Amino acid sequence: MRAVGVHPDVVVVTSRIWQTNATALRSGGEVLLIDSPYFPDELEALPALLGQVGFEPNALFATHADYDHVLGPLAFPGLPLGVGDHTMERIRTSPGEAQRELRDEDARNYVSREKPLALGSLQSLPVPGYLELGEIELELHVADGHTSDGTALLSREYGVLVVGDYLSDVEIPWISPGGGLDVYRATLARLAPLVEAVETVIPGHGLPHTRDTALRLIDEDLDYLDALAEGVQRIPKARDTARQREIHAENLARVS
Image (cartoon, rainbow, N blue to C red; front, top):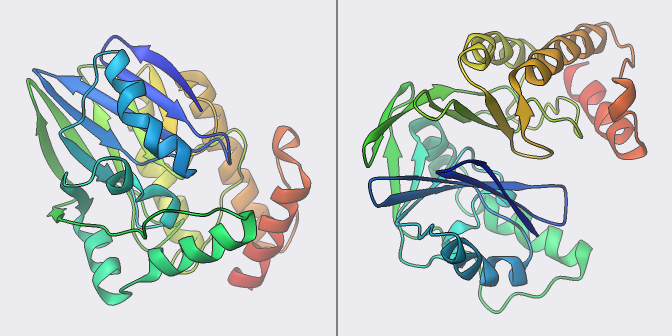
């Protein structure tokens, strides 16, 4: 697990699996942790790691309800977990989904946890909408298509956009259950002007990007989705790995 500062009040912590990012934003004595690392030892070490650089979260947020993004309560039990209203709807209509998927993934990776995942106190926030964090305001934007839910968070004051599972330099667009090709395209179109307004884009998986890199990834992802709609494999060269070809096969099966 590594931690990188992308702004004096923004730290990105990256898990050693899937390059999963958790992002901490600080303002006026308040700290919001968005998403989470995966491994139990990473979650255990997270409070001390953030505390060393002056970040002590008092609230959590998950960009969407996939199990690898909702593990914050394991690191900070008792803190409320904020989610977009469409993420709350997904959790309510599919109770226990994240817990079951986490158990399955843990079994595949031979991971043992001392306690099961409990989402704790959930707080539903309207999306699109706004979230006050200390002295700044975060914009909440709809980011569905990868799944049926999803929220991107924009801080214009800090020039930072946290996008969840979009605009990754290591992962192609992934149409998971509940997602959709046209909805994914609409999210990319929605993200484009937000990217133009910031200096740094933080994906759910992979390196934080500059504005120019994120705009290039939007173009590559739209090109990939156009080819996917035609049943053609056109994975960007830098992401053409065995795992991404497996994801492409899943996408083909889901959109055909």
